[in-house]
Image (cartoon, rainbow, N blue to C red):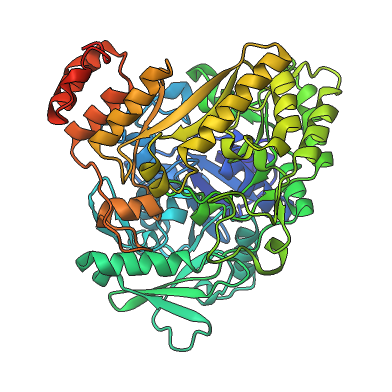
Length: 590
């Protein structure tokens, strides 16, 4: 480990004895050299390949000056909004401006512009003209083709087109960004590249082999049925082992998506997470009050990526992919030892996990041969018999880390897939968690309690959660500890009517549950739920799907779930009156 941050100023470049940089990365986040930050990972991967990389973090976008501070890179500018979509970072689900930003120093809002990638790309063009621009990160990944934008409430073009960039890397992008650099190093036209996990713009598609043309931007903007058709076609071309190229016409040009990058083997993942990260915020932020987003992950370990759950509201399917990719236990133990030797380590590793904590080392025989099954879900209606869960390896890993000197506690703070913990085969793993790795609260996401809503969410039925809660209660008694469940719920998801919110509220009242972790549904680009929100239909079945779209109904649904909040009393009375359920006022204490 070292404090050798990559250059952020002309003085830094001079200190290294460099005349110019090969690549400059621009990010909407503050500069944190930690593997939880995408810019840090990409910069270290490129550095390992011998490229001279500089960072411009949270530039002042009101002029081109800040974008020129490191000069003109020899190969390209890489642009990302940061770890979150800039519109999600700047606005609430009800389209109100947020007053803070966990990825900015001191939590200060306003350092990241709306549609950050678009703004940054325009400023780079203004400063450097025809320089090559590469887009990446979650914002680029989910906006790589024409998409529905919740904040503008309209269909927007591919971000690649709007930003006038040269190539877009979707997904986690470590392999493709190196290929892009090598391609440019050879002096080749990046528009002609056929690099997995990338999107480019072309004039024609007739000569492309294995290519599927989906409805155009103009078509899906004019016709919601065409939007659904395009969504289905994109969804079916996400298997890295079987996907074809996807082409979508935008006026007289085509946006061309190459098949997804192949999943990484454990050895490849290990090399990425073992790069020489300083694991610190850049010292220029020392006087600003730190970074809240960094403090929560500073002593955490990423063990795997990808999720085979396919929840309707989640973007992971289109970003990290459905195939779970896990690091080796040896690599994770090595990282734990590094954390334990940090001068400010207090003995607690706050988290070890990924998108779903209990999918570490999950595997399926077909994943490495032909990818995932096209018409079969790994977890629904029940877990596929061919999906092997790595609980035995996981508990062995936890025990190794607990034996490291200076490690007093190893907690698992990531969310769990509770339906996989309700089965008897998970009993030993659940006991290990409850005895040693839950810091008092375990995070799970029932999301709702009405089966018709859960079906639209592509979640397990309510009975699955009940079985887990019973197993968790028994395990609490067995280990003689007071552990609690932190339950996450989503308000106003497609398929959830006001009467469903009432049923959920009654469910919670009768179980004396008062949830604080409530998420107002946001229809993210390129998610199934976002598609249903916009079109009012399930694109796969053609069935109509109700969605609460007025601010008032969304408020009422939330009020029925957060029934103890005094400020919700008026909304609860209104909801009960609309539902002709005023006989329940006493139960809701209104």
